Image 1 (cartoon, rainbow, N blue to C red):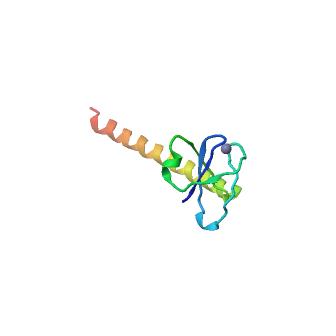
Image 2: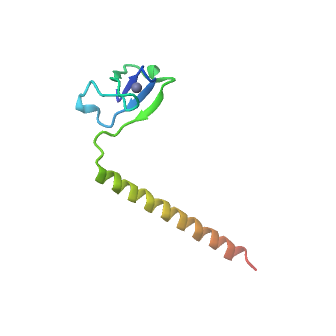
Image 3: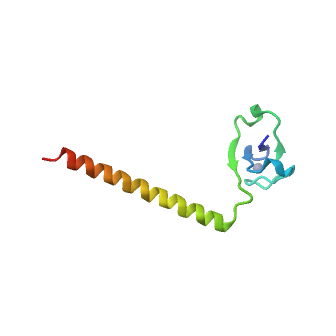
Amino acid sequence: MPHSKCLHCRSRVWHDNVASGRAADLCPGCGDELEAVTDLSELVGLRALRVRPHLTHRQTADQFDRISRQIRETVAAQDAERQRRIDFDGP
Ligand SMILES: [Zn+2]
């Protein structure tokens, strides 16, 4: 199961790479050792902390650039749509 739990700070952690076989990861919230989860019901009520242990700074920067570009494109598309409506409804 791609989840671990930390009972110390009552959180759950989702793992990108389940196949790595790493049993003992540390909680990104408090640094305590995470416990394996055998049933999803164990996750109920725990806050979600998601970690991406293999993400490099370069990947993070690329991802930031990609998200920034998507936001700019979305804003531009909405502006164009709004202008189109103004032109259409105009006198
Ligand atoms: Zn913790």
